[in-house]
Length: 86
Image 1 (cartoon, rainbow, N blue to C red):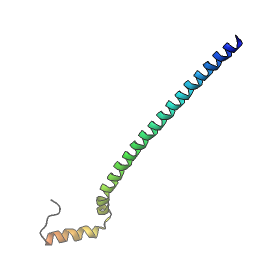
Image 2 (cartoon, rainbow, N blue to C red):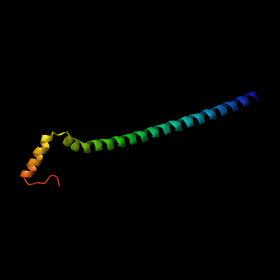
Image 3 (cartoon, rainbow, N blue to C red):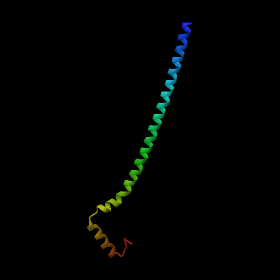
Image 4 (cartoon, rainbow, N blue to C red):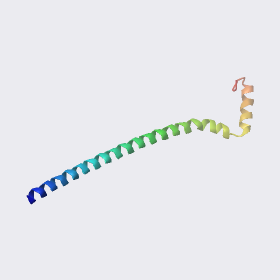
């Protein structure tokens, strides 16, 4: 009877160990999936921010120009009869 009890306890232990292994494997897969999703979201946010930054480069160059550039531009547009600002 003792051998049967030990065999049953061993089987129960092995079943518990297998359940634990499976739960850990599932949790690890979930963590990897979450990390991949977050990385993709971060990459998309970076792409959007980079696009926004690139879109602002032109206007920022204009803002950073000395005032003399604008007066020259207005003078040139007046001489050439081109309306820059409508």
